[in-house]
Image 1 (cartoon, helix red, strand yellow):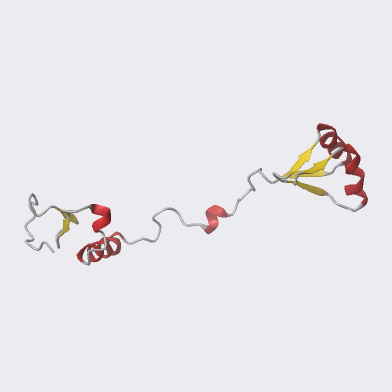
Image 2 (cartoon, one colour):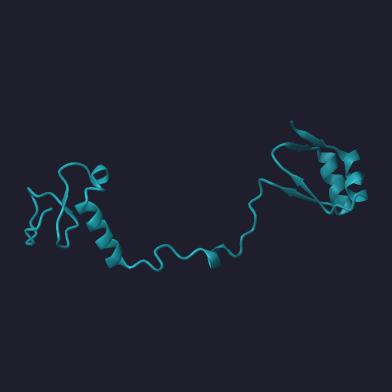
Length: 116
């Protein structure tokens, strides 16, 4: 059920000592209530506003940071040898032990000779 905030409700927030009112998707606020809140110094915080996140870059590493390409390649080759990637790469695709991670045994020009 939606909550309606009108101009007459603003003094009640102030009387309770509230400094901020959360306006979420279940709240309807009249224009007069917005004006009254502004005039009274009552902050309206809209839930749809993106929250500022100055620390996200500090917390989340840059894409690919800390990944060893050789380790990833070995993991993918191991998964391919175990048949765990068949749904991803499709039938007819095989792995080999050379630098060609996925090659078709019929058209592979690699010299490893180790198609698994």
